[in-house]
Amino acid sequence: MNLKGKVHKYGANVDTDAIIPARYLNISEPGELSKHCMEGIDGEFLKRVKPGDIIVATTNFGCGSSREHAPIAIKAAGISCVIAQSFARIFFRNAINIGLPLLECAQANEIEQDDELEVALENGEISDITRNKVFKAEPYPDFMLQLISTGGLIEYTRKNIEARGSQ
Amino acid sequence: MTGSTISEKILAAHSGKDKVSPGEFLNVRVDLVMANDITAPIAIREFERIGVKSVFDPKRVVMVPDHFVPNKDIPSAEQAKLMREFAWEQGVIYFEVGSGGIEHVLLPEKGLVLPGEVVVGADSHTCTYGALGAFATGMGSTDIACAMATGEIWMKVPPTIKLVYHGRAKKWVSGKDLILYTIGNIGVDGALYATMEFCGEAIDALSMDSRFTMANMAVEAGAKAGIFRIDNKTRAYLKERARRPYQAYEPDEDAHYEKIIEYDVSQIEPQVAFPHLPSNTKPISDVGEVRIDQAVIGSCTNGRIDDLQTAADVLKWMKVHPEVRCIVIPGSQEVYLEALRRGLIEIFVRAGAVVSPPTCGPCLGGHMGVLGDGERAISTTNRNFVGRMGSPDSEVYLSNPAIAAASAILGRIGSPEEIVG
Image (tube, rainbow over all chains, first blue to last red; front, side, top):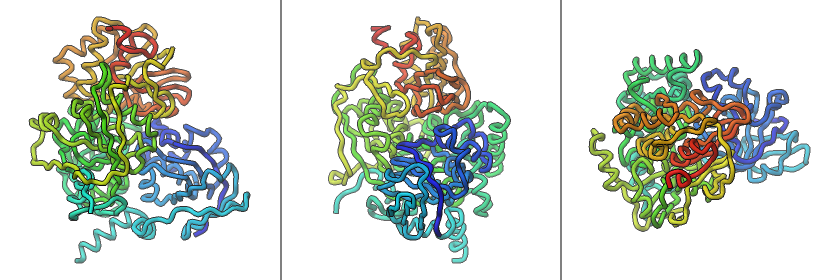
């Protein structure tokens, strides 16, 4: 599957309070959460974002709390994937679990605000159309690929439970 | 073949293997699954999608309302209600307002977490339980939903970083200062995906409460877990609490560590983390003139009895600065009661501090002390990100309880040395 969109660029250590401030954690509905996405760091994000757009950041994206509200808000805001040099581990699990693709790419810092990207999820190829450059993301381990291809953790767990029940 | 670290041994024992190695993917059996009033609602929604009728074992699932309770508004009351009704229906362990407190203060107190166990919680500070020699880690709501349904979870075995603390700590230097110093040294992603194993004679000398503080903030260095070996202090803590047998694991002498980092704690001063990262630390002597509007003493990091005792030792016979709001939050009902017995609550009230019921409250800008534009707080909590305690234009400085209490009196960030000598 190829994703295509414009870049919203951030730096290092974008924390979950920046992605969705805790004052909105009294709601859990994705559409409502998306109305406050990135509010803690970028007041213009919601005005700019278009479906399919891509968030690009440098290191430790999603650090801080375990709130799944963070990837939920990003996904519901229309972001098709997040590319970063590294991700905080809980955010990484949460995003994969809910079906928000993440790509770890050492050259993510070379991608700039408003660049047009095309991303091939199967081989992790990131084409920066604006800059005419191609970057390669880290491949997912086999287990993660299986999890993603099954449709996320809930589907994966449901299948495992069914498989056990039929033994 | 090299030996194993504590966390490798625990994960091996919980996945039916003799030995596991960093990077390996495992299906791990969990001993306890936890969620709170902001993470449980999504976990329950996802749990219902899985299609199982009941949790894997109601005695191994805990739900704690602590973030926005006593409820601050209608939406948070609806979330707490959803969790409460699920907890009652499923018969899981549930602590209502008035019988519980902040999850990471509460669960160890209640003997629900024991050495050698695997605990997963829908809260990033679940790593706190590593102080008891458990492998405990925070996850999101969907992971927790699956763990509630099956009693198992997938994990990638983390590498272990060994942190050795030598020497004797100076007065007013606590576990909070050691962990802030460490995060300042290695950075907020200095232990990304790894287990931090804390050891050395300075760690042996720490109280259990200080060890909880250190393990609590392992996530602030990006770690998956922070873990301690158990000793006589751990056993004494567990004596009246543990109601089932437990197994302690020691690291092998030839265990493989990704890195070994050593510190001389005799050189470490009380630390203050400046906005807006926990790694942005300075020793108290380098802080300069930083005026404050609020001082918060509490949280899952520093809301235990030792923390309140230290704050009271500083605040006794003193007055909170007239331009400062000092908010003291006992971490649990048990801590609150012990503080009452020791006369600490009277010291706080006489000093002009306000004592809140146990809640996460202001730490995450929830309630009970949210900051306005341009306001500044010193806080014993764990994060000082932009807007963490309220307005995106406010500032949070992190410290230990002694520094926070002294600052409340001085009206600026300062040391108890300036007050009690």
